[in-house]
Length: 456
Image (cartoon, rainbow, N blue to C red; front, side, top):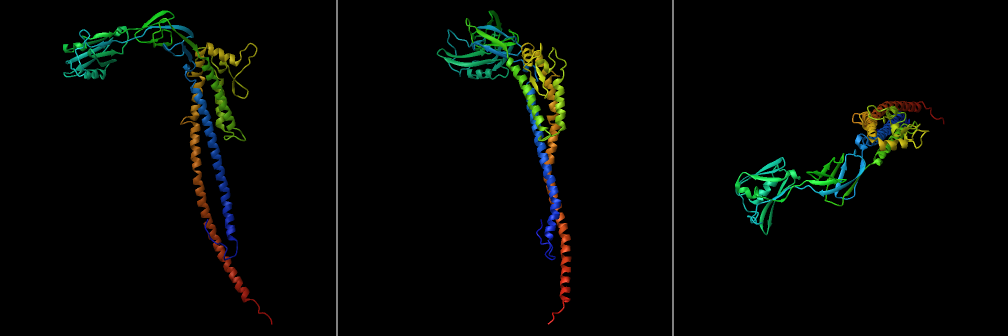
């Protein structure tokens, strides 16, 4: 406020009067703005809590949004001679797996006479032409130039852009220096061959000796022989992939496949608990007396939509599990979800329904939640209409934050208006002060002028 001394001329308490006028204008507006700021902060906090609760539940729902989420299996092998994976649909069982032979690729070595190489070091040259490497139906060419040493030839082979899996090495021994080729393409039908366009390259192509013959992998599943060009045996046990790691003839590994019922039970329990936590949050936020979003229509609307979805029948499923109740999930009088522990008469309890569905109808449980019309995907879509970047709650949160940031501008505008109001008051009361001062001076003069002289 301006620093003045209104009332000096008149002797009136004009400063007090001005202050009273300004307070009468300022206090109600300041209270209004403070209440508005508090209300916005409370609502922003409530919307943030609401969005967070929806996001947490959506995270749980996404774990149930793929039918295969329920198809988890426990796979154990008694030894590390094999490794095993399943797509989740394999039948339970126990199998004996015996690895009689691992798949191998060819290994060739450059020509020698009586075991002695014609080359004495890696810097020896050979000739020129084209080498053609082939294994099964695959092949690639390498061009050898005059003056290329064994080391250069090795590098050209290994660095060829279309190399099919041949690794060349230069090996120096007491018998001389050899160029060797190792094929990573396994299987008896994939023997490595090397051809040439020039006889000067015969010693490192057509004249090579076979140090290792390509062979198939061979295992026995419960005594029955299975062969394959690689060590990976896919779907010999349906929906199972076995990889042979080590030969164990005579000491087979035991493979055990069991459905992971605990996985499905956990997914359903997380769904029930997650829904109940969300419902509790919405109830707290909308409490008429203490809720940050008391009487909020959005919460009432969402509760109604949730209730409709969890009570609805899911269409298009292949089996009889088409409601949450069919997998043991029921709605209590308070609107929460539960697995009832008690049945009625001949009717199974919720936990019994759940355990039976997981043990005998796992694919149908997956459909109930994860089909296009499934419970999880419908709820995810619903939450998206509120929580996505263009969702109603997100837009509301943005608008509230904009309004809150505008409070500063309203305070500034109020301050400007009060200063203008004070200036106006001071102009008026300054005129009053001078007028009263003039009348006071006149009154004093008249009093003095009209004063009768004292009598002796």
